[in-house]
Image 1 (tube, helix red, strand yellow):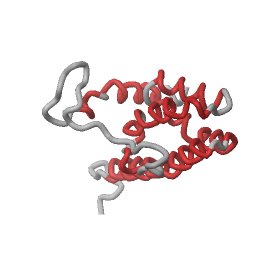
Image 2: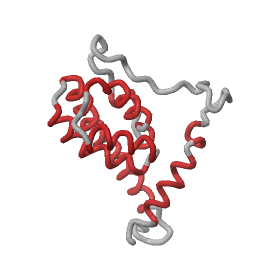
Image 3: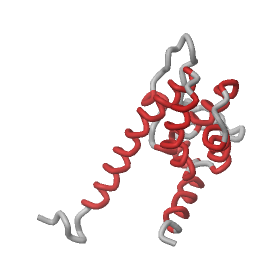
Length: 152
């Protein structure tokens, strides 16, 4: 068997499986963060925020800083819930998850999140095919820089 030889793609396959598993592990953490934000449980918001917000450092630095400020550096302020949710939802794709994965939270209390459609404008350009993955290339480069500096 060539499972562990240089010619095999075992390591690449395991990398993808590992990333998929990690992505799915964020789902219940985010669901509980949102639940506790709606409930106004400041201590549990902080607990779940401590688990997920640091993961967003690999995504958009400006959004990460806002979330860090709102959820980790200060006590949760329920009046900022919608802004915080918008920021969280904007980073789902960076973690490899979608609004569909998270699901709707009591739609009579909180509007359902939706992933942008293929034709959603980007910089006044209306795409005709799925291009969001390519449009986030700068985030991939940012992530590679973080990984390359990890050991230093």
